[in-house]
Amino acid sequence: MPKKIQSLSGMHDIFNSRYDYFEKIREVSSRVAKEYGFKGIEFPIMEETELFARGVGGVTDIVEKEMYTFKTKGGDFVALRPEGTASVMRAYIEHNFYTRPQPTKLFYFGPFFRYERPQAGRFRQFWQFGLEAIGKSCFVVDVQIIKVISNIFEELGIKTKIEVNNMGDLKCRKEFKTVLRRYLKKRSNLLCSDCKRRLKENPLRVLDCKQCIEVKSEAPQIIDHICKQCRSDFKNFLEFLEELDIPYNLNPFLVRGLDYYTGTVYEFFLETEDEERMAVGGGGRYDGLSKILGDEERPATGVAIGIERIILAMEKSGGDIIEKKIPDVFIAQLGDLAKKKALNLFEEMRNSKVDVAESFGQDSLKSQMNRADKLGAKITIIIGKEEAVEDRVILRDMNSGEQEKIKTEEVLKEVKGRLKKNKNKD
Image (tube, rainbow, N blue to C red; front, side, top):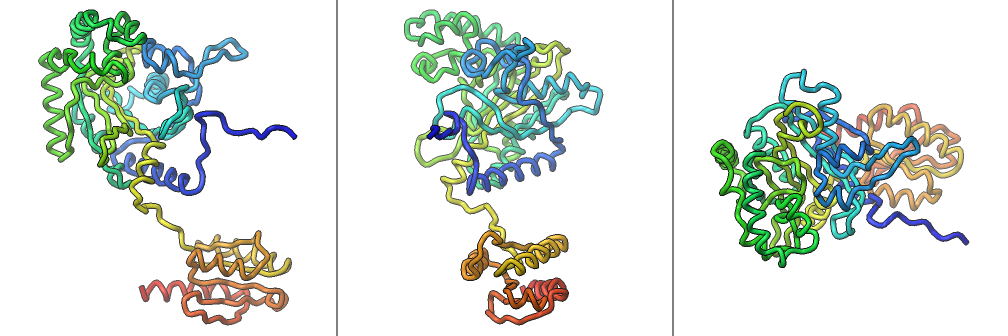
Protein backbone atom coordinates (compact mmCIF):
# COMPACT_ATOMS: atom_id res chain seq x y z
CA MET A 1 0.00 0.00 0.00
CA PRO A 2 1.46 3.39 -0.97
CA LYS A 3 2.22 5.74 1.91
CA LYS A 4 -0.30 8.42 2.79
CA ILE A 5 0.61 11.86 1.48
CA GLN A 6 0.34 14.64 4.04
CA SER A 7 0.75 18.39 3.82
CA LEU A 8 4.30 19.73 3.92
CA SER A 9 5.80 20.87 7.20
CA GLY A 10 4.71 24.42 7.93
CA MET A 11 1.86 24.28 5.42
CA HIS A 12 -1.67 23.94 6.75
CA ASP A 13 -5.26 23.37 5.71
CA ILE A 14 -7.95 25.82 6.76
CA PHE A 15 -11.38 24.32 7.44
CA ASN A 16 -14.34 24.11 9.84
CA SER A 17 -14.42 26.86 12.50
CA ARG A 18 -11.02 28.21 11.46
CA TYR A 19 -12.32 28.78 7.95
CA ASP A 20 -15.25 30.71 9.44
CA TYR A 21 -12.77 32.92 11.33
CA PHE A 22 -10.69 33.24 8.17
CA GLU A 23 -13.68 34.41 6.14
CA LYS A 24 -14.75 36.79 8.91
CA ILE A 25 -11.30 38.43 8.99
CA ARG A 26 -11.26 38.76 5.21
CA GLU A 27 -14.74 40.32 5.16
CA VAL A 28 -14.13 42.77 8.01
CA SER A 29 -10.64 43.87 6.91
CA SER A 30 -11.65 44.39 3.27
CA ARG A 31 -14.86 46.24 4.18
CA VAL A 32 -13.17 48.58 6.66
CA ALA A 33 -10.34 49.29 4.21
CA LYS A 34 -12.85 50.23 1.50
CA GLU A 35 -14.61 52.57 3.95
CA TYR A 36 -11.32 54.50 4.15
CA GLY A 37 -10.90 54.67 0.37
CA PHE A 38 -8.49 51.76 -0.15
CA LYS A 39 -8.83 49.71 -3.34
CA GLY A 40 -8.04 46.02 -3.64
CA ILE A 41 -5.02 44.66 -5.51
CA GLU A 42 -3.91 41.11 -6.34
CA PHE A 43 -0.31 40.43 -7.38
CA PRO A 44 1.54 37.26 -8.42
CA ILE A 45 2.58 34.52 -6.01
CA MET A 46 6.01 34.52 -7.70
CA GLU A 47 8.26 37.46 -8.50
CA GLU A 48 11.84 37.91 -9.62
CA THR A 49 14.16 37.06 -6.75
CA GLU A 50 15.90 40.40 -7.27
CA LEU A 51 12.73 42.29 -6.31
CA PHE A 52 13.00 41.04 -2.73
CA ALA A 53 16.80 40.95 -2.60
CA ARG A 54 16.86 44.66 -3.45
CA GLY A 55 13.60 45.75 -1.85
CA VAL A 56 13.56 43.79 1.42
CA GLY A 57 17.34 43.84 1.86
CA GLY A 58 20.08 41.31 1.23
CA VAL A 59 21.17 41.22 4.89
CA THR A 60 17.72 40.44 6.28
CA ASP A 61 16.74 36.99 7.58
CA ILE A 62 13.99 36.86 4.95
CA VAL A 63 16.41 37.05 2.03
CA GLU A 64 19.32 35.21 3.64
CA LYS A 65 17.45 32.29 5.21
CA GLU A 66 13.71 32.24 4.56
CA MET A 67 12.90 32.82 0.88
CA TYR A 68 11.76 29.98 -1.35
CA THR A 69 13.84 30.59 -4.48
CA PHE A 70 14.43 28.49 -7.57
CA LYS A 71 15.47 28.65 -11.20
CA THR A 72 12.74 28.18 -13.79
CA LYS A 73 13.07 26.04 -16.91
CA GLY A 74 13.58 29.27 -18.83
CA GLY A 75 16.54 30.21 -16.64
CA ASP A 76 14.84 32.93 -14.59
CA PHE A 77 15.53 33.21 -10.87
CA VAL A 78 12.23 33.58 -9.05
CA ALA A 79 10.94 33.51 -5.48
CA LEU A 80 7.65 32.79 -3.79
CA ARG A 81 6.62 36.13 -2.32
CA PRO A 82 7.73 36.44 1.33
CA GLU A 83 5.89 39.74 1.91
CA GLY A 84 3.61 42.16 0.05
CA THR A 85 5.05 45.67 0.12
CA ALA A 86 7.81 45.16 -2.47
CA SER A 87 5.28 43.60 -4.88
CA VAL A 88 2.82 46.46 -4.41
CA MET A 89 5.55 49.02 -5.07
CA ARG A 90 6.65 47.07 -8.15
CA ALA A 91 3.04 47.16 -9.43
CA TYR A 92 2.74 50.88 -8.57
CA ILE A 93 5.81 51.68 -10.69
CA GLU A 94 5.07 49.23 -13.51
CA HIS A 95 1.49 50.43 -14.05
CA ASN A 96 2.20 54.16 -13.58
CA PHE A 97 -0.06 54.58 -10.55
CA TYR A 98 1.78 57.84 -9.87
CA THR A 99 -0.10 59.48 -12.76
CA ARG A 100 -3.32 59.22 -10.75
CA PRO A 101 -4.46 61.37 -7.81
CA GLN A 102 -2.22 60.69 -4.82
CA PRO A 103 -1.91 58.96 -2.48
CA THR A 104 -2.64 55.61 -4.11
CA LYS A 105 -4.31 53.56 -1.36
CA LEU A 106 -4.30 49.78 -1.87
CA PHE A 107 -5.12 46.69 0.20
CA TYR A 108 -4.40 43.00 -0.32
CA PHE A 109 -5.26 39.68 1.31
CA GLY A 110 -3.32 36.57 0.36
CA PRO A 111 -0.77 33.83 1.09
CA PHE A 112 2.97 34.39 1.54
CA PHE A 113 5.91 32.03 2.03
CA ARG A 114 8.93 31.92 4.31
CA TYR A 115 11.08 28.94 5.22
CA GLU A 116 11.27 29.22 9.00
CA ARG A 117 10.67 26.99 12.00
CA PRO A 118 6.93 26.34 12.34
CA GLN A 119 5.43 27.33 15.71
CA ALA A 120 2.18 28.63 17.17
CA GLY A 121 0.67 31.07 14.70
CA ARG A 122 3.69 30.91 12.38
CA PHE A 123 3.71 28.81 9.23
CA ARG A 124 5.79 28.48 6.09
CA GLN A 125 2.72 29.35 4.06
CA PHE A 126 0.90 32.09 5.92
CA TRP A 127 -1.75 34.69 5.12
CA GLN A 128 -1.57 38.44 5.51
CA PHE A 129 -3.81 41.44 5.08
CA GLY A 130 -1.99 44.61 4.15
CA LEU A 131 -2.55 48.31 3.47
CA GLU A 132 -0.23 50.49 1.40
CA ALA A 133 -0.51 54.26 0.76
CA ILE A 134 1.97 55.55 -1.82
CA GLY A 135 2.60 59.03 -3.18
CA LYS A 136 1.97 61.29 -0.18
CA SER A 137 4.46 62.37 2.45
CA CYS A 138 2.33 63.13 5.50
CA PHE A 139 2.27 61.61 8.98
CA VAL A 140 -1.55 61.85 8.92
CA VAL A 141 -1.59 58.96 6.42
CA ASP A 142 0.44 56.82 8.86
CA VAL A 143 -1.99 57.63 11.65
CA GLN A 144 -5.00 56.82 9.48
CA ILE A 145 -3.55 53.42 8.54
CA ILE A 146 -3.04 52.62 12.22
CA LYS A 147 -6.64 53.70 12.88
CA VAL A 148 -7.91 51.41 10.11
CA ILE A 149 -6.10 48.41 11.61
CA SER A 150 -7.23 49.36 15.12
CA ASN A 151 -10.84 49.45 13.92
CA ILE A 152 -10.45 46.05 12.27
CA PHE A 153 -9.06 44.54 15.48
CA GLU A 154 -11.84 46.15 17.51
CA GLU A 155 -14.55 44.71 15.26
CA LEU A 156 -12.92 41.28 15.49
CA GLY A 157 -12.92 41.49 19.29
CA ILE A 158 -9.13 41.58 19.63
CA LYS A 159 -7.34 43.84 22.10
CA THR A 160 -3.93 45.08 20.97
CA LYS A 161 -1.30 47.55 22.04
CA ILE A 162 1.02 49.48 19.74
CA GLU A 163 4.76 50.01 20.08
CA VAL A 164 6.25 52.84 18.01
CA ASN A 165 9.68 54.19 17.11
CA ASN A 166 11.30 56.44 14.52
CA MET A 167 14.26 55.18 12.47
CA GLY A 168 15.09 58.54 10.89
CA ASP A 169 15.73 59.20 7.21
CA LEU A 170 18.64 57.71 5.26
CA LYS A 171 21.04 60.44 6.45
CA CYS A 172 20.06 59.94 10.10
CA ARG A 173 20.40 56.20 9.69
CA LYS A 174 23.89 56.49 8.21
CA GLU A 175 25.14 58.58 11.12
CA PHE A 176 23.46 56.31 13.68
CA LYS A 177 24.96 53.19 12.12
CA THR A 178 28.40 54.64 12.78
CA VAL A 179 27.55 55.21 16.45
CA LEU A 180 25.91 51.78 16.81
CA ARG A 181 28.75 49.96 15.07
CA ARG A 182 31.26 51.59 17.42
CA TYR A 183 29.24 50.39 20.42
CA LEU A 184 28.79 46.86 19.07
CA LYS A 185 32.43 46.38 18.17
CA LYS A 186 33.37 46.81 21.82
CA ARG A 187 30.98 43.98 22.67
CA SER A 188 31.46 41.78 19.63
CA ASN A 189 32.42 38.82 21.83
CA LEU A 190 28.85 38.86 23.22
CA LEU A 191 27.18 38.79 19.80
CA CYS A 192 25.78 35.65 18.18
CA SER A 193 27.40 34.43 14.95
CA ASP A 194 24.71 36.06 12.78
CA CYS A 195 25.09 39.42 14.50
CA LYS A 196 28.86 39.35 14.16
CA ARG A 197 28.32 39.24 10.41
CA ARG A 198 25.52 41.82 10.59
CA LEU A 199 27.87 44.16 12.44
CA LYS A 200 29.84 44.62 9.22
CA GLU A 201 26.96 44.73 6.77
CA ASN A 202 24.02 46.31 8.64
CA PRO A 203 24.33 46.82 12.41
CA LEU A 204 20.63 47.79 12.70
CA ARG A 205 19.76 44.13 12.23
CA VAL A 206 21.40 43.43 15.61
CA LEU A 207 18.62 45.42 17.27
CA ASP A 208 16.14 42.99 15.68
CA CYS A 209 17.94 39.89 17.01
CA LYS A 210 16.07 37.70 19.50
CA GLN A 211 19.33 36.33 21.01
CA CYS A 212 21.51 39.36 21.70
CA ILE A 213 19.14 40.85 24.27
CA GLU A 214 21.81 41.85 26.79
CA VAL A 215 23.82 43.74 24.18
CA LYS A 216 20.70 45.46 22.85
CA SER A 217 19.52 46.62 26.27
CA GLU A 218 22.37 49.14 26.65
CA ALA A 219 22.77 50.04 22.98
CA PRO A 220 22.44 53.66 21.83
CA GLN A 221 18.92 54.62 20.80
CA ILE A 222 18.23 55.83 17.29
CA ILE A 223 15.60 58.30 18.54
CA ASP A 224 18.48 60.28 20.12
CA HIS A 225 20.22 60.59 16.76
CA ILE A 226 17.45 61.56 14.33
CA CYS A 227 17.44 64.98 12.64
CA LYS A 228 15.24 67.95 13.51
CA GLN A 229 12.74 67.24 10.69
CA CYS A 230 12.33 63.56 11.59
CA ARG A 231 11.91 64.50 15.25
CA SER A 232 9.20 67.04 14.32
CA ASP A 233 7.36 64.55 12.11
CA PHE A 234 7.47 61.92 14.84
CA LYS A 235 6.20 64.38 17.44
CA ASN A 236 3.25 65.29 15.19
CA PHE A 237 2.59 61.61 14.53
CA LEU A 238 2.37 60.88 18.28
CA GLU A 239 0.13 63.89 18.88
CA PHE A 240 -2.31 62.68 16.23
CA LEU A 241 -2.36 59.20 17.80
CA GLU A 242 -3.30 60.84 21.09
CA GLU A 243 -5.95 62.94 19.36
CA LEU A 244 -7.62 59.73 18.13
CA ASP A 245 -7.26 58.11 21.58
CA ILE A 246 -4.92 55.42 20.25
CA PRO A 247 -2.67 54.32 23.15
CA TYR A 248 0.96 53.53 22.35
CA ASN A 249 4.29 52.69 23.95
CA LEU A 250 7.66 54.01 22.78
CA ASN A 251 10.12 51.23 21.95
CA PRO A 252 13.55 52.75 21.12
CA PHE A 253 14.86 49.40 19.81
CA LEU A 254 12.03 48.71 17.38
CA VAL A 255 13.56 48.66 13.88
CA ARG A 256 11.37 46.10 12.05
CA GLY A 257 12.99 43.29 10.07
CA LEU A 258 13.11 44.82 6.61
CA ASP A 259 15.66 47.24 5.18
CA TYR A 260 13.22 49.48 3.30
CA TYR A 261 11.75 51.11 6.42
CA THR A 262 12.55 54.76 7.19
CA GLY A 263 10.98 57.18 9.64
CA THR A 264 8.04 56.00 11.75
CA VAL A 265 7.71 52.27 12.43
CA TYR A 266 5.31 50.37 14.69
CA GLU A 267 4.07 46.94 15.70
CA PHE A 268 0.78 45.66 17.07
CA PHE A 269 0.98 43.23 20.01
CA LEU A 270 -1.82 41.26 21.61
CA GLU A 271 -2.95 42.52 25.00
CA THR A 272 -2.72 39.46 27.23
CA GLU A 273 -2.94 38.89 30.98
CA ASP A 274 0.35 36.98 30.98
CA GLU A 275 3.70 38.36 29.85
CA GLU A 276 3.70 36.52 26.53
CA ARG A 277 4.38 38.86 23.62
CA MET A 278 2.87 37.99 20.27
CA ALA A 279 3.10 40.44 17.41
CA VAL A 280 0.06 40.36 15.12
CA GLY A 281 1.12 43.07 12.68
CA GLY A 282 3.45 45.92 11.94
CA GLY A 283 4.42 48.57 9.47
CA GLY A 284 5.79 52.04 8.90
CA ARG A 285 7.16 54.38 6.26
CA TYR A 286 9.34 53.21 3.36
CA ASP A 287 9.98 56.36 1.35
CA GLY A 288 13.15 55.01 -0.28
CA LEU A 289 11.81 51.71 -1.62
CA SER A 290 10.73 53.03 -5.02
CA LYS A 291 14.24 54.40 -5.62
CA ILE A 292 15.78 51.07 -4.67
CA LEU A 293 13.56 49.48 -7.31
CA GLY A 294 14.74 51.84 -10.05
CA ASP A 295 12.17 54.65 -9.92
CA GLU A 296 12.35 58.13 -8.42
CA GLU A 297 11.68 58.43 -4.71
CA ARG A 298 8.01 58.06 -3.82
CA PRO A 299 6.80 58.68 -0.24
CA ALA A 300 5.03 55.57 1.04
CA THR A 301 3.71 53.91 4.17
CA GLY A 302 2.01 50.62 4.92
CA VAL A 303 1.17 47.83 7.35
CA ALA A 304 0.56 44.07 7.29
CA ILE A 305 -1.22 41.85 9.83
CA GLY A 306 -0.89 38.07 10.24
CA ILE A 307 -4.14 36.16 9.74
CA GLU A 308 -3.12 32.94 11.53
CA ARG A 309 -2.14 34.80 14.68
CA ILE A 310 -5.37 36.77 14.62
CA ILE A 311 -7.32 33.50 14.40
CA LEU A 312 -5.39 32.21 17.42
CA ALA A 313 -6.31 35.36 19.32
CA MET A 314 -9.99 35.04 18.36
CA GLU A 315 -10.05 31.40 19.44
CA LYS A 316 -8.34 32.24 22.71
CA SER A 317 -10.72 35.08 23.52
CA GLY A 318 -13.66 32.72 23.23
CA GLY A 319 -15.81 35.44 21.70
CA ASP A 320 -18.47 34.17 19.31
CA ILE A 321 -18.39 36.79 16.57
CA ILE A 322 -19.10 34.31 13.79
CA GLU A 323 -22.76 34.61 12.94
CA LYS A 324 -24.38 31.22 12.67
CA LYS A 325 -26.39 30.95 9.50
CA ILE A 326 -29.96 29.96 10.37
CA PRO A 327 -31.96 28.84 7.32
CA ASP A 328 -35.56 29.93 6.89
CA VAL A 329 -36.48 26.65 5.23
CA PHE A 330 -35.20 23.09 5.31
CA ILE A 331 -36.24 20.57 2.65
CA ALA A 332 -36.48 16.91 3.65
CA GLN A 333 -37.26 14.07 1.26
CA LEU A 334 -37.80 10.31 1.18
CA GLY A 335 -37.40 8.25 -1.98
CA ASP A 336 -35.96 8.87 -5.44
CA LEU A 337 -39.01 10.61 -6.90
CA ALA A 338 -39.26 12.84 -3.80
CA LYS A 339 -35.58 13.67 -4.11
CA LYS A 340 -36.10 14.84 -7.71
CA LYS A 341 -38.99 17.06 -6.59
CA ALA A 342 -36.89 18.36 -3.68
CA LEU A 343 -33.98 19.29 -5.96
CA ASN A 344 -36.24 21.41 -8.16
CA LEU A 345 -37.94 23.00 -5.16
CA PHE A 346 -34.56 23.84 -3.61
CA GLU A 347 -33.52 25.73 -6.76
CA GLU A 348 -36.86 27.55 -6.87
CA MET A 349 -36.41 28.67 -3.26
CA ARG A 350 -32.80 29.74 -3.82
CA ASN A 351 -33.65 31.71 -6.98
CA SER A 352 -36.38 33.51 -5.00
CA LYS A 353 -33.81 34.54 -2.33
CA VAL A 354 -35.24 32.26 0.35
CA ASP A 355 -32.50 31.04 2.72
CA VAL A 356 -32.87 27.29 2.26
CA ALA A 357 -30.93 24.24 3.47
CA GLU A 358 -31.04 20.52 2.71
CA SER A 359 -29.38 17.18 3.38
CA PHE A 360 -29.95 15.33 0.14
CA GLY A 361 -27.16 12.87 0.91
CA GLN A 362 -29.21 11.36 3.73
CA ASP A 363 -32.09 8.97 3.13
CA SER A 364 -33.36 8.69 6.70
CA LEU A 365 -36.22 11.14 7.29
CA LYS A 366 -35.50 11.09 11.03
CA SER A 367 -31.87 12.14 10.43
CA GLN A 368 -32.99 14.94 8.13
CA MET A 369 -35.51 16.24 10.66
CA ASN A 370 -32.83 16.19 13.35
CA ARG A 371 -30.62 18.19 11.03
CA ALA A 372 -33.38 20.74 10.40
CA ASP A 373 -33.92 21.10 14.14
CA LYS A 374 -30.18 21.49 14.81
CA LEU A 375 -29.86 24.20 12.16
CA GLY A 376 -32.80 26.07 13.69
CA ALA A 377 -34.88 26.17 10.49
CA LYS A 378 -38.20 27.98 10.87
CA ILE A 379 -40.07 25.83 8.34
CA THR A 380 -39.42 22.31 7.09
CA ILE A 381 -40.82 21.10 3.79
CA ILE A 382 -41.27 17.32 3.77
CA ILE A 383 -41.70 15.37 0.55
CA GLY A 384 -42.37 11.66 1.00
CA LYS A 385 -43.21 9.00 -1.58
CA GLU A 386 -46.96 9.73 -1.30
CA GLU A 387 -46.49 13.51 -1.54
CA ALA A 388 -44.24 13.13 -4.57
CA VAL A 389 -46.91 11.17 -6.43
CA GLU A 390 -49.65 13.62 -5.40
CA ASP A 391 -47.48 16.61 -6.31
CA ARG A 392 -47.90 17.95 -2.78
CA VAL A 393 -45.64 18.69 0.18
CA ILE A 394 -45.99 18.73 3.94
CA LEU A 395 -45.29 22.15 5.43
CA ARG A 396 -44.16 21.92 9.06
CA ASP A 397 -43.84 24.89 11.43
CA MET A 398 -40.77 23.99 13.50
CA ASN A 399 -41.80 26.15 16.47
CA SER A 400 -45.40 24.96 16.93
CA GLY A 401 -45.02 21.54 15.34
CA GLU A 402 -48.16 22.12 13.27
CA GLN A 403 -48.11 20.85 9.71
CA GLU A 404 -50.34 20.75 6.66
CA LYS A 405 -50.35 19.45 3.10
CA ILE A 406 -50.34 21.94 0.24
CA LYS A 407 -49.84 21.77 -3.52
CA THR A 408 -46.25 22.02 -4.72
CA GLU A 409 -47.08 24.97 -6.96
CA GLU A 410 -48.29 26.93 -3.92
CA VAL A 411 -45.29 26.22 -1.68
CA LEU A 412 -43.17 29.27 -2.50
CA LYS A 413 -46.04 31.71 -2.01
CA GLU A 414 -47.06 30.06 1.27
CA VAL A 415 -43.50 30.01 2.61
CA LYS A 416 -42.91 33.69 1.81
CA GLY A 417 -46.20 34.61 3.45
CA ARG A 418 -45.34 32.76 6.65
CA LEU A 419 -41.83 34.20 6.81
CA LYS A 420 -43.16 37.73 6.34
CA LYS A 421 -45.76 37.14 9.05
CA ASN A 422 -43.12 35.84 11.48
CA LYS A 423 -40.87 38.79 10.70
CA ASN A 424 -43.66 41.27 11.46
CA LYS A 425 -44.22 39.53 14.82
CA ASP A 426 -40.55 39.94 15.70
